Amino acid sequence: MSALRIVVHSDYLCPWCYNADVRLRRVEEEFAGRVEIEWRAFLLRPSPRPVPDSPEAEARALEEFVRYTGSWLRPAAEPDAATFRVWETTEGPPTHSLPAHCVAKAAATLGPDAFRAMHDRLLAAYFTENRDISRTPVLRELWADAGLCADAFRGAEDPALVERTLAEHQDALERGMTGVPAAYLEGQDAFLLGAQPLALYRRWVTRNLPGA
Image (cartoon, rainbow, N blue to C red; front, side):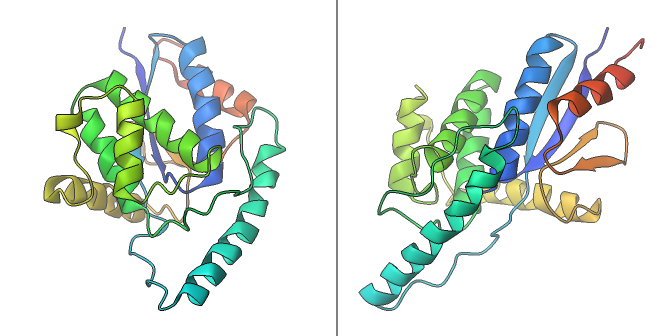
């Protein structure tokens, strides 16, 4: 029997996507072998932010970003939530969404386990460890943390990975997605927008399992 394939568009800079990841991982484990999840890109920040023109401007940008991360306490307070920490480091703010997606796609070329390891490291590094996952040196460290071959590392400078990431983002827009996370069943047009409760994901999967 073929598995039910769920496609999820998300961004590594989106806290609600982290909650969706935790919940959908639970669903994937509970329906082991019957559900497969594919993560695709959506770029909340498709272009790099302007570089601060002075140390003072850089400090203000970081201060504003730290205040923004206080909003992560809202998804953190939900049931079945991921682990979040309001920003405490001097890294960041992230420049844009593309680098993390490209590195995740580089990991995917090594196999599904490599992708999952990098995917997990990116989310935890940003939301829990307060690392700037738009910086290449940080991404290289996370790549090593995930146990991946250093020679296979590729980042946002790889044209093929950039093209694939942008194509996935464009596909999401053409499907009418205005934000993330957004999930749909392969072969269907309708999608679930937002980080849904775990119980709703379970019901959605149960209703659509082959043979149900």
